[in-house]
Image (cartoon, rainbow, N blue to C red; front, side, top):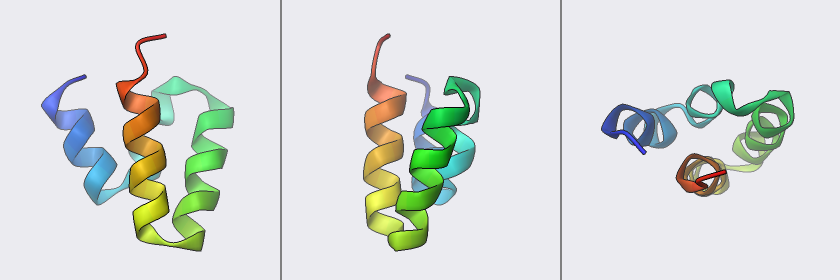
Length: 51
């Protein structure tokens, strides 16, 4: 997990998971539409996942 991805996950959650696949992007985008905090949490979880 790089510092750039963490900053992107905090500032623009969907952009941080763009390289992880279309499904991850859609999930984080929907969470961000529900609220900024759920989007950030979802993005950090996906970015922090080692798979």
